[in-house]
Each structure stands twice: as C-alpha cells, then as structure tokens.
Length: 114
Image (cartoon, rainbow, N blue to C red):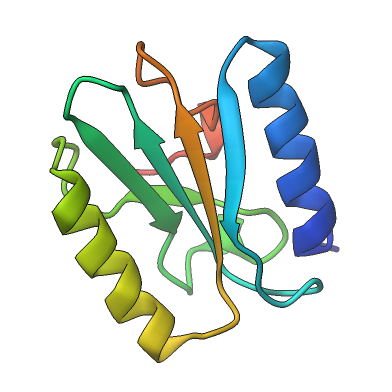
C-alpha cells in the first residue's frame, strides 16, 4: 500500500531540512495520489529535475520510484520551468517540490532508477 502523496511530501521535506537543505512546496496536487516532481536548484545555475519512474516497473506498484527527467544532466531554470509547465497542462493535480542545495543532493537514495 502506497503512502498518501501529501504525507510522503511532508516527510520528504522534513528529511531534506534535517540535512540542512531548504525545501518548498511550489505546487500541491491531489493529496492522495498526485504525481510528484522534485526540482533541485544547486544555486550556481544548474538545475536537476526528478519525476515519477515509468509505470509498469514492478517496484512502482507499492513504492514511489524516481528517474531523472533530463538524462542525468543539469539544465537551466528555464528548461525546468518549461518541462514542469508542460507536465502541469497534462496533469493539473501534480506536486512540485523544490530544494535549494549547493551540493545538489536529492535524498532519493535507493528510490532512484536509471
């Protein structure tokens, strides 16, 4: 059984903040099952974006899994904003979480898939 999105986001932000990383909810979607995108701003012009792993992977049925939205390379804030705007047009109930961290940490650990 998957944890409600709102609870997952709040727990994720607590974890990030406990590591000294500033985190914000930019857009809040469906409390129960909204998709979550995680935008990392490492404060030097590089941005990273992680979104839900593709459906159909065995691990994604019960747990949230993540993948890079831009093939493991940093992008500009404009590219990130454009990508998220496109996603929001497709799914207005999505969540956007933004982290500011000079080290570019995402705190997704073993939940990240290639």
